[in-house]
Length: 69
Image (cartoon, rainbow, N blue to C red; front, side, top):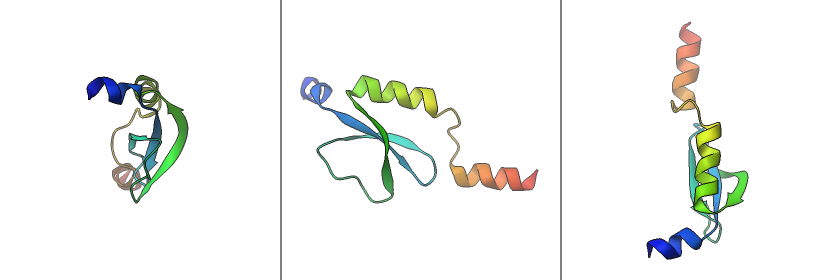
């Protein structure tokens, strides 16, 4: 199963809290998630997430902390 999954193509998805994940391209996205624009194998998608998701705090927390400053 693991080898078959590694052969699949994924898309990078993001939610309203600016949290990232990957999702199989042949599956409907879950509610609240939208495509980021990157599609590829698992390693490619995860490398993209490592590059762009540098602040793991949800957007609502970041906004709240910024408003307090």
